[in-house]
Length: 279
Image 1: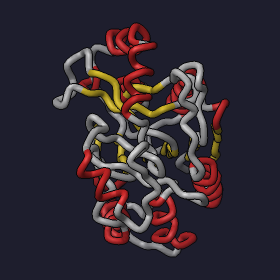
Image 2 (image 1 turned 30 degrees about the vertical axis):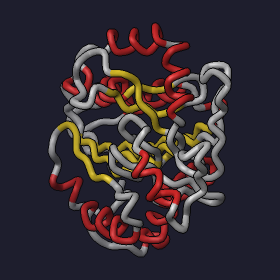
Image 3 (image 1 turned 180 degrees about the vertical axis):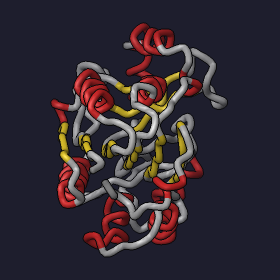
Image 4 (image 1 turned 60 degrees about the vertical axis):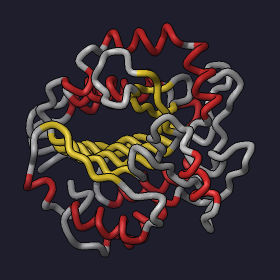
């Protein structure tokens, strides 16, 4: 029988000492991680959860590496992240827009180059499903986008802080954090020179809360994307392949937040044809 392991990350705040005084306060990320843990248990995964102070870069990378060592062909790893998304300047030339996407973890940002390196540790034939309810948006200075978001019924933003109510690290905090920790982030990219060109033999499916040039809305109970996904899932009543699952989620989302469907590693039609969250 296939084995299913899962990891659920949720951060309603981060360590201000690393982020130059910014604490990254959010409301819906812990509930997101708890909801996804419950879903994973019902689907017969063996879950691990890392919340707030537990969700350090070393803990997250260690948990993913541990799963890679345990899983074999036919097994599945289910990873969820709820928290801020941001970017750092690309220093190894693997990004067309000159920025690497990051997950804003408790003690530092996890650069997408590091995630790709972790995917390469998984054996061929392993299925990896990633659900990310976070922002991955350009230079974080798109005034028109912010205006659209703030005019929406779900908006919480203000002129002083247009990212409020979303899971985007504010531009000033992003710049200050990188300036303070430039040697760290440049060094990470030097250590992972292959970037997203590293060879990945597993099959990775990513369903994320928005496009790279958009913002993901937070909420008191759940993030908008996670809330919508759970509605479509309907406690396991949903039937259909991953593409249909993604499409039904996207149809329920507002025009300013369009979920993304992305593949990495080896294409696996059998994996994509399964009902979501199948071990």
